Structures are given as structure tokens and as C-alpha cells.
Image (tube, rainbow, N blue to C red):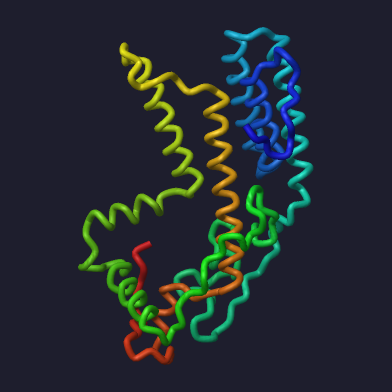
Length: 276
């Protein structure tokens, strides 16, 4: 498979599993280990001991040591490369009171960064993508003009279906919205991949006629999660670069403050609250 930044060069006989464990441990420690009270690092240390202990049941100490050394090397190299990739935590969002422009929302009237991003995605707007040629490679076109028929159609759909107390939204749609709002994209899609891998291996183990094929390997599983992670990382970068380009207002702003938007097909509702 194609590699990302670091070419394969692990020594012969090195444990792949130990390399994977050490690389994950090293990168998590670098990124999150120094958080309050050092609590994450304690958890990482404990998890590493357990993981390496499980590997020791089937692989030699020499193989594990060689794998861990290589995993540490890969983590160090990638961390060094990405440490100058433009990631920042000082990227205030351009808010103003112009029609159609983003501003701090009435249900979250705090700092600009929190109000627009919540999870701190502002940090990726100056970041070099992992695999895209540029953050603008798949940039969507601009949102519709607030005076357009398309805007009025979208406005009224969101106003009706997205309201906290909508009578038009079905229980199924409500459940779907709650599901997608319950976690981050990375958590949800990694869980989807994990469940599919586990189902494939479970079906293969119980099926005597081998109709489900073979079990997936560590390398194949690692590649799946690497592709998912890289895709989501670049999607986040591209998404937030586009948000900075258009800095369009949110539904709660538009619906509450749209009296003077110049569109006769939109009617404001100063009490409107979104479902999520």
C-alpha cells in the first residue's frame, strides 16, 4: 500500500502489533498526555501495558522490542512533519451584523470561536491537508443569495422541520437527528468500520463453507482506519476553510433576524429554537 510520510522500514522480525501500539501510544501522549492533572497519560500508560502484555502471549520479547522501537520512530517522524502544518488555536471567526453573514448566536452568545465551532475546528483552517492537493480542491459553491427563491425554499424547510417543537418532523427523522448529533464524525464512522470488521470476522469464524471469505488482517484493518482518518481530517480542513470563505449565518440567526433580508417569501420568528 501507499505510505503516508514515512516509508516502510521496520526491521525484519519486528512485531507489527507492537509497532501499531507504540505508534498510537506515542502520538496520543504527544497530543493529549499533558492535559489537566496528567490524567490522560496515566490512562495511556495503563493501556499500553495491557496491550503489550497481550502481544507477549504470542510474540517474543525481541520482536516486541523491535516493533515498539519502529512504532516510536514512525510516530516521532510524523509528529515532526505535521508540527509545522499550519494548525493553530488562534483563528477568530469574522462575525458581523450584515444580512446573511455569520454572527454569534443568541443561544450561545460567548466567544466567536466557541459559537462557530464548538469543538475547535477553527484550528484547521490554516492547516495543510494530508492527501488533498489543497483545502480548496473540492470547495462547494457559495450558498444561495438571501433574496433568491432557493434560499426561501431552504429557509422555510429548516424553519418547519428543524424547529425544536416541529409538528411536521416524523419520529424517525427526530431519531436520526439525535443519532448524528450524539457524537463526532470520527467516533461514528470509526465505530461503523469497527463493527463491519468484527461482523466480517464473526461471519467467517462461524461459516463452515467459507462463503464469507477470510478474516481481515491487521494490515488491512490498519489501512481501513488510516484511510477513514485521513479522509475525515481532510474533510474537516476543507469544510472549515469553506466556512471561512463564505461565513454564512446560521438558521437560528436567519430565522430570528430575517425581517429585512429582502426576500418576501421568508417570515421571521424571533422565538424560533432549533432541535439540536
